[in-house]
Length: 285
Image 1: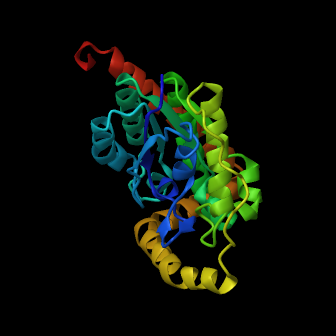
Image 2 (image 1 turned 60 degrees about the vertical axis):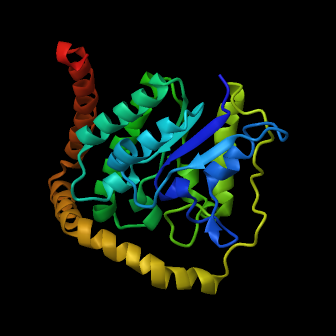
């Protein structure tokens, strides 16, 4: 299979936030696309990712657009924004991703996926606030792992400790990669594709070509766009997150915190089992 047409689906990570070039966002998907085809025949690249997108948006808006382009390769990296909403529903996330993956691979496209660090760790939230978000992201990652294997996707593990610990990979907002982070992400994806013969061009360089934003520019971003981002997320998530944090404290005092992790693991298993049961029913066919 060739990847003559590459379509990228997802949220702000894939849209390129954190990697500004000539007044626009570039990002890992564009860097990857440049190294998929040979220099004399570059891949036809389309980035359909949108800031703030959730699994619902990828399923109902981005996937139909992608299918119309008849891609040989599609990347789907999404899920963090689902965890940052008070409406978070792991069963719904699993069902949407299963449909997206199945639809794309069913049309013959090679599929590239990734799991991601939890946003609470990236923001440095205190334990009681950060743990519920970490538990949600681990659950989404577990679903992505299982469904990626089920649908034969090439999967990048980008939730390991080095991604969180290496601050040189991240931009001022602490949620999106900077240029170096986007380059490392792209290079790791390129290695996965090259091993399967889906990338024959040169891999993206891992070191930045542009100087990092100045401290004043970073502070300005945090005071303007960054403040707006926090305000929007707080309005939507904060009341529920405070309730979840109170539950964390209560379980910690009672010595039953492990039960929350067990409950989350059961939720992952139930979400995946539910997909299997639904497909086994006659009406699902």
